[in-house]
Length: 180
Image 1 (cartoon, rainbow, N blue to C red):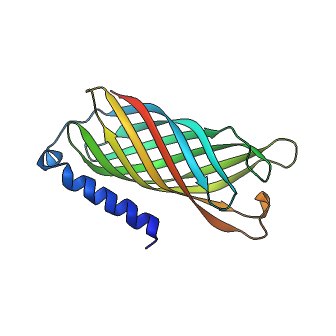
Image 2 (image 1 turned 120 degrees about the vertical axis):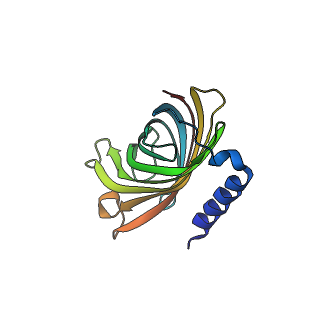
Image 3 (image 1 turned 30 degrees about the horizontal axis):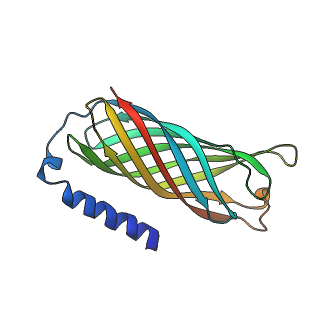
Protein backbone atom coordinates (compact mmCIF):
# COMPACT_ATOMS: atom_id res chain seq x y z
CA UNK A 1 0.00 0.00 0.00
CA UNK A 2 1.53 3.38 -0.99
CA UNK A 3 2.56 5.67 1.90
CA UNK A 4 0.30 8.51 0.70
CA UNK A 5 -2.79 6.29 0.72
CA UNK A 6 -1.87 4.96 4.18
CA UNK A 7 -1.69 8.51 5.52
CA UNK A 8 -5.08 9.41 4.01
CA UNK A 9 -6.61 6.26 5.48
CA UNK A 10 -5.10 6.97 8.94
CA UNK A 11 -6.37 10.56 8.85
CA UNK A 12 -9.87 9.38 7.88
CA UNK A 13 -9.92 6.82 10.69
CA UNK A 14 -8.83 9.47 13.20
CA UNK A 15 -11.51 11.91 12.06
CA UNK A 16 -14.15 9.19 12.16
CA UNK A 17 -13.21 8.34 15.73
CA UNK A 18 -13.56 11.94 16.97
CA UNK A 19 -16.89 12.59 15.24
CA UNK A 20 -18.64 10.67 18.04
CA UNK A 21 -21.87 8.76 18.26
CA UNK A 22 -23.91 11.51 16.56
CA UNK A 23 -22.18 10.66 13.29
CA UNK A 24 -24.13 7.40 13.16
CA UNK A 25 -27.52 9.15 13.37
CA UNK A 26 -29.55 9.70 10.22
CA UNK A 27 -29.40 13.35 9.20
CA UNK A 28 -31.64 13.67 6.13
CA UNK A 29 -28.87 15.29 4.10
CA UNK A 30 -29.95 17.73 1.38
CA UNK A 31 -30.18 16.00 -2.00
CA UNK A 32 -28.05 18.46 -4.01
CA UNK A 33 -24.77 20.20 -3.21
CA UNK A 34 -23.11 22.69 -5.56
CA UNK A 35 -19.99 24.73 -4.93
CA UNK A 36 -16.79 26.30 -6.12
CA UNK A 37 -13.23 25.75 -5.00
CA UNK A 38 -9.56 26.46 -5.42
CA UNK A 39 -7.37 23.50 -6.32
CA UNK A 40 -3.69 22.68 -6.03
CA UNK A 41 -2.00 19.79 -7.82
CA UNK A 42 1.57 18.62 -7.46
CA UNK A 43 2.39 17.25 -10.90
CA UNK A 44 4.85 14.53 -9.98
CA UNK A 45 6.41 13.91 -13.39
CA UNK A 46 6.41 17.55 -14.44
CA UNK A 47 8.68 19.98 -12.59
CA UNK A 48 5.71 22.10 -11.57
CA UNK A 49 2.93 22.77 -9.12
CA UNK A 50 -0.43 23.61 -10.62
CA UNK A 51 -3.16 25.83 -9.19
CA UNK A 52 -6.60 26.48 -10.53
CA UNK A 53 -10.29 26.94 -9.86
CA UNK A 54 -13.26 24.68 -10.29
CA UNK A 55 -16.59 23.51 -9.05
CA UNK A 56 -18.55 20.43 -8.06
CA UNK A 57 -22.10 19.12 -8.16
CA UNK A 58 -23.22 16.28 -5.91
CA UNK A 59 -26.50 14.33 -5.85
CA UNK A 60 -26.87 12.59 -2.47
CA UNK A 61 -28.63 9.28 -3.07
CA UNK A 62 -28.65 8.58 0.68
CA UNK A 63 -27.03 10.27 3.69
CA UNK A 64 -23.96 8.10 3.07
CA UNK A 65 -23.68 7.82 -0.74
CA UNK A 66 -23.44 10.56 -3.33
CA UNK A 67 -22.83 10.74 -7.07
CA UNK A 68 -20.77 13.74 -8.10
CA UNK A 69 -18.97 15.53 -10.88
CA UNK A 70 -16.10 18.00 -10.63
CA UNK A 71 -14.54 20.35 -13.18
CA UNK A 72 -11.20 22.14 -12.70
CA UNK A 73 -9.37 24.68 -14.86
CA UNK A 74 -5.63 25.28 -14.47
CA UNK A 75 -4.65 28.45 -16.37
CA UNK A 76 -0.86 28.49 -15.89
CA UNK A 77 1.87 27.20 -18.18
CA UNK A 78 3.86 24.15 -17.09
CA UNK A 79 7.22 22.99 -18.48
CA UNK A 80 6.66 21.04 -21.67
CA UNK A 81 4.52 23.78 -23.18
CA UNK A 82 0.98 23.13 -21.92
CA UNK A 83 -0.59 26.58 -21.70
CA UNK A 84 -3.56 25.39 -19.62
CA UNK A 85 -5.22 22.23 -18.41
CA UNK A 86 -8.81 21.15 -17.88
CA UNK A 87 -9.94 18.30 -15.68
CA UNK A 88 -13.32 16.59 -15.36
CA UNK A 89 -14.00 13.79 -12.87
CA UNK A 90 -17.24 11.85 -12.29
CA UNK A 91 -17.90 9.24 -9.63
CA UNK A 92 -19.08 8.39 -6.13
CA UNK A 93 -18.36 9.45 -2.59
CA UNK A 94 -19.36 7.31 0.37
CA UNK A 95 -18.94 7.81 4.10
CA UNK A 96 -20.69 9.10 7.18
CA UNK A 97 -22.05 12.48 8.22
CA UNK A 98 -23.48 14.15 11.27
CA UNK A 99 -25.45 17.38 11.49
CA UNK A 100 -22.20 19.39 11.51
CA UNK A 101 -19.62 17.37 9.52
CA UNK A 102 -19.05 14.50 7.13
CA UNK A 103 -16.12 12.36 6.05
CA UNK A 104 -16.14 10.44 2.79
CA UNK A 105 -14.08 8.24 0.49
CA UNK A 106 -14.15 9.28 -3.20
CA UNK A 107 -13.54 7.26 -6.36
CA UNK A 108 -13.83 9.19 -9.64
CA UNK A 109 -12.65 8.41 -13.18
CA UNK A 110 -12.47 11.17 -15.77
CA UNK A 111 -10.04 13.00 -18.02
CA UNK A 112 -7.32 15.64 -18.03
CA UNK A 113 -6.93 17.78 -21.13
CA UNK A 114 -3.60 19.46 -21.88
CA UNK A 115 -4.07 22.53 -24.09
CA UNK A 116 -1.07 23.47 -26.23
CA UNK A 117 -1.14 26.83 -28.01
CA UNK A 118 0.39 26.45 -31.46
CA UNK A 119 3.23 24.06 -30.58
CA UNK A 120 1.35 20.73 -30.56
CA UNK A 121 -2.18 19.38 -30.77
CA UNK A 122 -4.19 19.31 -27.55
CA UNK A 123 -4.03 16.02 -25.69
CA UNK A 124 -6.80 14.47 -23.58
CA UNK A 125 -5.70 11.76 -21.15
CA UNK A 126 -7.54 9.34 -18.87
CA UNK A 127 -7.49 10.43 -15.20
CA UNK A 128 -8.57 8.65 -12.03
CA UNK A 129 -9.00 10.32 -8.63
CA UNK A 130 -9.03 8.37 -5.37
CA UNK A 131 -8.98 9.98 -1.93
CA UNK A 132 -10.97 11.57 0.85
CA UNK A 133 -13.44 14.40 1.39
CA UNK A 134 -14.05 16.25 4.64
CA UNK A 135 -17.11 18.50 4.84
CA UNK A 136 -18.24 20.98 7.48
CA UNK A 137 -21.84 22.23 7.63
CA UNK A 138 -21.68 25.59 9.45
CA UNK A 139 -25.28 26.37 8.42
CA UNK A 140 -28.05 24.06 7.25
CA UNK A 141 -27.74 25.19 3.60
CA UNK A 142 -23.94 25.66 3.37
CA UNK A 143 -20.94 23.35 3.11
CA UNK A 144 -17.21 23.96 3.50
CA UNK A 145 -15.39 21.18 1.67
CA UNK A 146 -11.81 19.88 1.65
CA UNK A 147 -10.66 17.14 -0.75
CA UNK A 148 -7.30 15.39 -0.90
CA UNK A 149 -6.41 12.60 -3.25
CA UNK A 150 -4.17 10.94 -5.77
CA UNK A 151 -5.11 12.05 -9.27
CA UNK A 152 -3.61 9.47 -11.61
CA UNK A 153 -3.08 10.58 -15.21
CA UNK A 154 -2.02 8.38 -18.11
CA UNK A 155 0.82 10.21 -19.93
CA UNK A 156 3.25 9.32 -22.69
CA UNK A 157 4.81 10.41 -25.99
CA UNK A 158 1.93 12.80 -26.75
CA UNK A 159 3.15 14.88 -23.78
CA UNK A 160 6.86 14.57 -24.55
CA UNK A 161 7.69 11.44 -22.52
CA UNK A 162 9.56 8.54 -24.21
CA UNK A 163 7.08 5.88 -22.97
CA UNK A 164 3.56 5.73 -21.58
CA UNK A 165 3.05 5.50 -17.81
CA UNK A 166 0.68 6.54 -15.03
CA UNK A 167 1.62 9.75 -13.21
CA UNK A 168 0.48 9.92 -9.56
CA UNK A 169 -0.30 13.51 -8.54
CA UNK A 170 -1.27 14.85 -5.12
CA UNK A 171 -4.31 17.11 -5.50
CA UNK A 172 -5.95 19.22 -2.80
CA UNK A 173 -9.10 21.37 -3.10
CA UNK A 174 -10.84 23.69 -0.67
CA UNK A 175 -14.16 25.35 -1.34
CA UNK A 176 -17.58 26.55 -0.25
CA UNK A 177 -20.95 25.47 -1.52
CA UNK A 178 -24.70 25.40 -1.04
CA UNK A 179 -27.00 22.49 -0.13
CA UNK A 180 -30.57 22.14 -1.41
